[in-house]
Length: 65
Image (cartoon, one colour):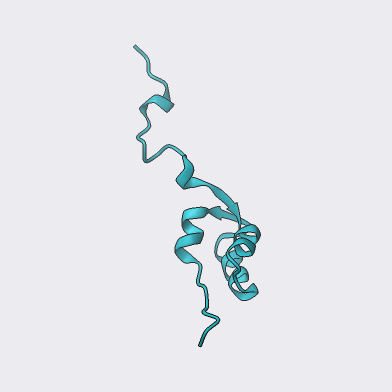
């Protein structure tokens, strides 16, 4: 019996909701990031990145000092 490659993939290898690809511009707008932080993420990942990477690496500066 021959199994397809998709059937042999682990759950960790399958793209799912955790691997959503987002525009860095849209992410910065939605999370109200400063333009400087948006530019840092663009240099790091380019115009698109996984949501997991963006959430893990975005820095929000507090408005209250």
